[in-house]
Length: 455
Image (cartoon, helix red, strand yellow):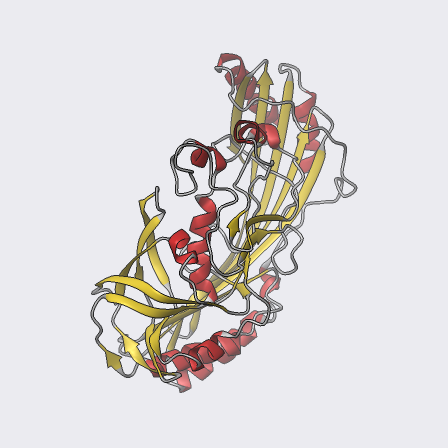
């Protein structure tokens, strides 16, 4: 059966007042390599059926993988039973109304190993160059295509095909004493410049030949786009309106309510999401497989548009369901699967920012990020694969690793320079969130709290 036929069969079965049916079809292709040699490659396929049944104000949700046509009725019956047995759902609202999208009947898109037709030869050339240059490359490339189909008893039929690609490259010296990492996010790998990535790694390994020991402290620090993405993604994930309204997060207003409208950054920074932004395009409607404080199964199919979370340095919106928007009195602004940060026009490149630095650190990667205090969004984590000393506009060596303690919200108020934004890949969170456009940032007093012995 096609995904559309599965949706229609599940919706047609009796037993619930209303129903939402979601079908996910996934295909994945990957390449893995180590020590300048391709090690494995493969493809995988998966499917999942999610049924949301509504009985009065009770809701039942059942999700199962690899469902055969003969098992559809069983999944629906299980969801119906769960709805009948459920307590009233706090977020219950009329399902989003609609009709069939123009592309509803189009087959699900797929990926295959052919997506690497240009990448694989470029990797081979990079392996040869690395071998000649005395370094070893490790890493992987992965491409996933998710096709999601959403149908409801209100007539709504929407679908979206989402390609997600990422390349991670780690270079090491032969004695493993020096290491550097770069990554790239892409939709189809046609825009990935492997040679440029390898050149960046070679330069960083060269910088690391000189070792400099530094004590803990606050240092002027340059954060490349990937490191900025890791911090801003955590901020975004923590921006649920309901938690803020209930006083649980950094976005709660003392005395009640939220901090929407307050200044977070002195510079005119924008942090926003836009489903149509070129290079990081994502689904234009809500897909919720379960309800939580930031999502609602009743919002499936809700149309998404450009949404500013921070506008000109001020908190503009928080992640809302239709239910939480009624509680907070704010706009309905559900989560969107990309994130973009921009500063004033004319921002410098990272290289230009390095050249303008008298003395500071270049912090290329953040790792093992964990929350310490939700009330301030204080995070801790480690540096990894390259912290470099910048002196008089040049990188002069690699320094020891640190544990850092920083709040991305507090950090916004201390930024002194915002560079030119570009598409990037976060290091820590790229298993979950890859579609980001971020600028490099200059922070005058980034908190390196202790020295880390990690290598």
